[in-house]
Length: 225
Image (cartoon, rainbow, N blue to C red; front, side, top):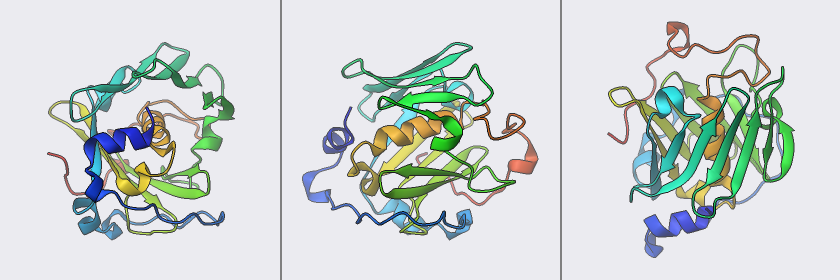
């Protein structure tokens, strides 16, 4: 489903804003502390709110559901492959092949290694970079939450996710700055699936144990209760 179509069904025309301008490629930004994210920007802008039942522990076999209860995407997996499919037109959005040392995927008919599409921002970090066209973004992740920050708007999150521990549901909120960028909604959904898959993307020697206290800090506040 196109991002603009999803956006139009959940945000009134009066709330529609123009996207931020494109910029030429620049060096990867220095990862921000979660405390530097402007919380006011997270509550005052139009957005869509998605939920992924079971996304906390098994996002690779789940569905992405909007606030109206409609399934936008399905995610299905076996030991070798994960597939993301648009429920509207039954089109395969992406396929990830896990059965190799460096997992590969096909996204929008383009083959690429997962670690190249969603690379680490640096050594000894789980912060990852996401490039979409001319837009560079950074996923700042913690064990049960994360913020997506554009390089040209430090402190302004364009998406965020959080796992609700009581229900094991993953909540994903995407703001209008991301929704007006063609194709970025699908890229965000796919990146969250990869981040929460529990699989190595080929650039680390071991899987990340998200329950390990050494990956935990308390910088993020709660949202979408």
